[in-house]
Amino acid sequence: MLERELFHQYGIVVNHVYRVNGGYVLQTTELGECILKRAETEREEDFPWYVLISQYFNQQNEPTLLPISTKRGRYIETIGNEAVTLYQLPWKTRTIRESDGHRLALLHRKGGNLLNNYSELPEVQPWQLRWQRRIDQLEAYRFTLMKQEQPLGEFDTLFIETFPYYLGLAENAIQYLVDATIDAGVNPFDVRTLVFRRFNAQNIGGTDFLLPSEFILDHPARDLAEWTRYKLFDERAGYDEVRSFILEYHQRRSMSAMEWNLLYARLLFPITYVEAIERYYSEENLKEKQEITHMLQNYVDREGEREYLFKGVFSELIGERGNTMRQIEWLML
Image 1 (cartoon, rainbow, N blue to C red):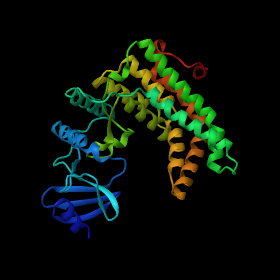
Image 2: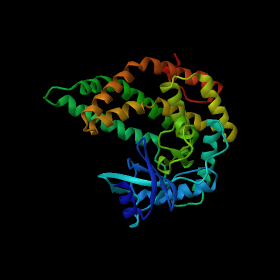
Image 3: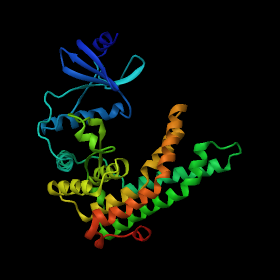
Image 4: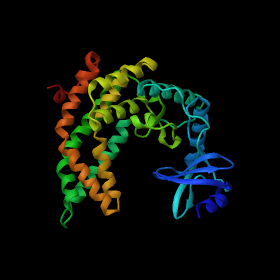
């Protein structure tokens, strides 16, 4: 029984429980309302940092779920043969409603202020190094597939045939970022804050609470690029909506010329394609593999549409700023 297990592991009395997507909402005597959710990407050693983020954001009027440890001091516990984490809901919700751009800029400023209090935080690895490593791994695996004697599956064939194009796109993004960094003469990744692992409008507009495990250390332009990618490529929104978002962000936190370079380079890098390949070859569930195959085929089929959007981003969003930015010739035609 869930209530008995929670009392045994956490020492809390559950008065009421109901199921929600991905977990349970609990009414407890000791902690008020809590959420019990499946542990996914979280690691036990990261939870002291998540607790710090949660406590800080709650102090800054940014309602954030607070991780709760078990009686033996662990944040990831096994209940019903599943790894779970327990979070206490904040006592209040955010009452001020702002645009996505203003809200994100405010979170970046607050996150940066938190990091300024710590001198021994890990450095942010430049994106081009991370991208190159992942592309090299895919290229090596593709070479292995091409040499094997057994028949290739549908996904293998799709990967082998499409990789050269996406390799070229990735190399464009990497070189663009390297050249822009050389032009600026500074390491842009010295600027860092708390950003979302993968930001879209749902992170701040679709929920009353922030989840601390969604935050990592990176450059603020990461969130700007991911929001823009989500809106243009996934939701197929217009440029006006993206322009408004960036303008609202800029009003709260000025964007530097280098941030425009970072934004454009990150949009160019085919992260969706790379992640699909990585997920497929690490996934064991056949149904999941079939869904990834279907998703990747749809993604590849829309490549012409994305190429058109790449050109539009430079002319419609970057505009006059492009005069001082590096340009990619094949996208300017």
